Image (cartoon, rainbow, N blue to C red; front, side):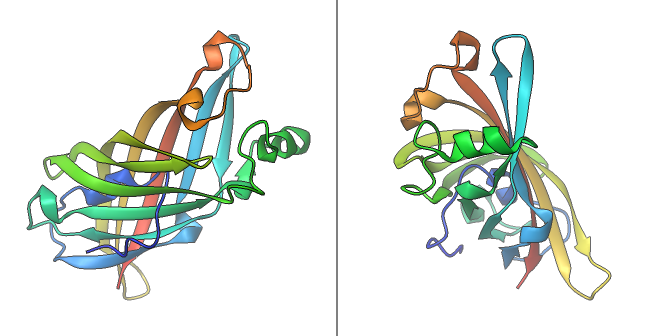
Length: 191
């Protein structure tokens, strides 16, 4: 089972999908190869894309077991937000949006999975900006196998659309920006 002390957004829902050749195992999320991106409308004419660069956590992945054996917990450092624009990033870290001083982490902890060995839906609790809500993340296994350093890895991707106001972030960006898409790219090393 996954260490539930690490929680997280968004992010990592895909880790519970069954795979081809792995055995039941706990994995540690590889922070250097995992990230969460977001996309939100910019005044209805274009997109603003950003990344949370610091993602950690763990997951249990068992290609032989049923959906009830798959789980994940992810933690995101909200101050690691990067949109390739320093002033915008400073504003996103402020109380208008993420309020990173008050809420330094976002978490996603899975509560269930439905699907097959290649894709499905991971349900869980997303805590963002101090608010916890259930979400359902569409997930897909990217791959798994031995790495060049003698370890074993598994990788997943997921996506979900959330409404900002549901998480207490109501700063007016116009009607096209009420929702935002989250994209999760998670890679873990087997313990």
